[in-house]
Amino acid sequence: SQQGEEDPQALSIQEGENATMNCSYKTSINNLQWYRQNSGRGLVHLILIRSNEREKHSGRLRVTLDTSKKSSSLLITASRAADTASYFCAMNSGYSTLTFGKGTMLLVSP
Amino acid sequence: EAQVTQNPRYLITVTGKKLTVTCSQNMNHEYMSWYRQDPGLGLRQIYYSMNVEVTDKGDVPEGYKVSRKEKRNFPLILESPSPNQTSLYFCASSPRDRGETQYFGPGTRLLVL
Image 1: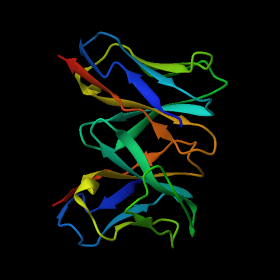
Image 2 (image 1 turned 135 degrees about the vertical axis):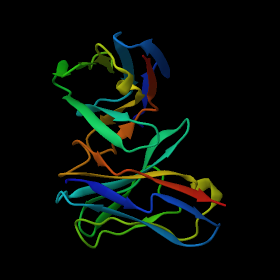
Image 3 (image 1 turned 90 degrees about the vertical axis):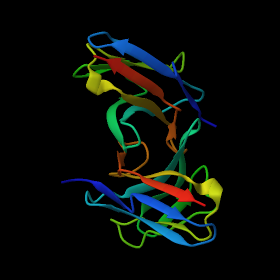
Image 4 (image 1 turned 90 degrees about the horizontal axis):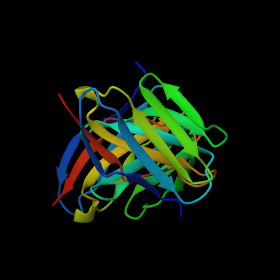
């Protein structure tokens, strides 16, 4: 079955630094999505990247997708304390359910 | 405001006492689903619904029931809750199917004693 693995599990940086999170998956996908979750709250969608796309940007977010390596990365540039949250990748593989990874906890210190 | 609402937000109950967690969306979405989130296990899908009167099992459906009588509502029913159903539950919806952006509710934290 499709499983996602985020790396690292936890990341601690200073404000202004860039944060990079990676996601690897096992089977082919239609699209891959990134979500953010503030402590115990609902997930908020950040970016969706389709299997035929290699890179997408949204504000300070940059997502890349390498289908040959079955991996994606989320880059947050010039991070802020308000970026502190957990970040999840979610893989859509056609008729299977949308499968979430276990998340990366990001702590941005002022 | 476009949103997914869940009630209650917090619930403490005892083993075997039937409960229902309601979910409602005001975006006219066809697809709705329920997830549970547990430490170390991430989010796992319980049930989903492609449209009214169409529901299907996700990855962890045991011990749960759902219904979709109206497009906007998708309640989660625990007929006989057990302690292993203690978890954080999320309802989500999307315009047509699971491949699209999911809009999540605020979550329901359930403790089964």
